[in-house]
Image (cartoon, rainbow, N blue to C red; front, side, top):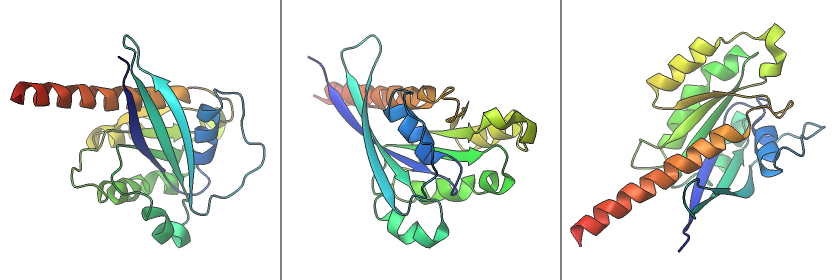
Length: 187
């Protein structure tokens, strides 16, 4: 019998790094990149099912696309209780957005008693390679030191946008399977 799991995915990072674009490209199966920038002022919710390979199970990703401006932070964290997975996004051409990643991760982790939330660090806008300021090594090091997986993507070019979501869905499903084994061993 297939199982449908629901994962709350907090998508966080500074304003303008491409969080909404990443979510919208993934949600539309890489069919739609938003042509105009519209600042997110609270949290926008998008839902997309992800099929788990080699099973009949599915993880519904509830993407909480969150505003990145400090002025909206009080509003945003009201929606962040009990996250399942986390996606921290930065712009490879913006050092400030990279420096802010730890702040965003700490805020999300503060919303759950278990601080080991599976997650990813996304280096977005890799299509702007000529203006790149953050090297892949810096991104990988930051991800590794904070227990995150590292991915690079370009929402604009719809390049590698799905992979981090598939990774998070798989990790969430794996955690579910591990819990099932623990519970069945207790019975």
